[in-house]
Image (cartoon, rainbow, N blue to C red):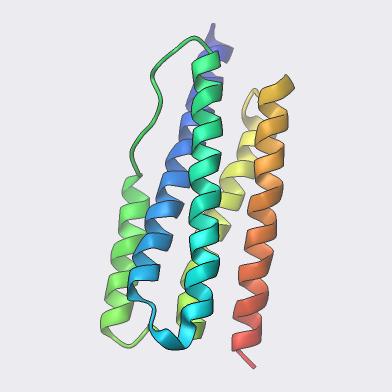
Length: 153
């Protein structure tokens, strides 16, 4: 029984960080100027990816025999979005700054997926879904990092 609850907690944590990611990218998209319109489309894709991830994870929680599915965002995610607001006020809205903040967020979700896969008591189809999502998250992280590195040059 405890393993089932631990699995539910892990899945709900992943839902929450995906919700944080959606909210973060939506916040950044609203603040991006025309010079970085390409980032707006990329971030929209990543927000959609996290919406889909959260839906899949919610279905997995339901398969555990509960309707106790996470629907909110975390306090740390709210703090990260507030930090984005502060940076924007002080001129941190150039391409490099935007990508640095995006990479910080991608680092956090990448770590959450790594932790879930190594410590999350996941098995079978649940593990496979989380592993597949982690691959997509890792690819997104690598793309954001490459764009950030290119903006340094």
